[in-house]
Image (cartoon, rainbow, N blue to C red; front, side, top):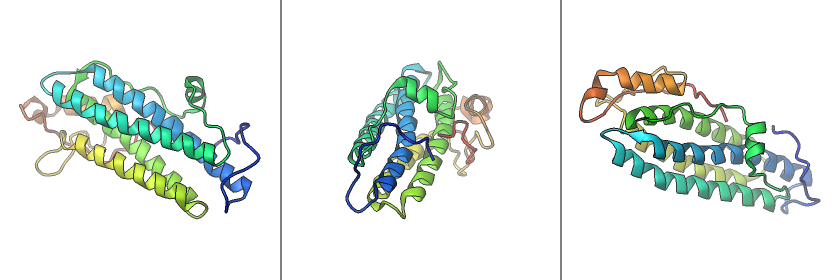
Length: 209
């Protein structure tokens, strides 16, 4: 669980003890950091994608950025409702995060999508873990996180559709780092074809949130 907040009010939502409500909000703070980081990472990829699939990837990322920003607002407002002041400050993200910055800069679309697939593996896995931790205490927060996981998984599918082979294999299968995933699709024979299709496996995320 996250470090106990020093920003707690003397109340929480009805039906929970103050301790329970604040503990749930502290879990949400970590998800808030992760999604604040994610929307910045997606924007970075949006600016740095190049190559034949530029328009497809460039324009595909913006709606997801907007959706993730909505999740950030939802998390922060739920925290405030539960009596804990949310922190969205850059310094807090850097101080409390457990992952490194996204490591891919100017690169073709399929390379960014392979790297971002690993990012999404980490974010989604940790979101699922968070909703499991709050499920017995606060089904309202659980429901919110379920909706966010649904949206994140849907967009991960959108990305994977660009880097999946016709046999259902992801070319960066087994990659453990973002740069490793990008390199895997770059060296794939399929990456040289006009379709830009490649293959991955559920690799362990390089940035556990």
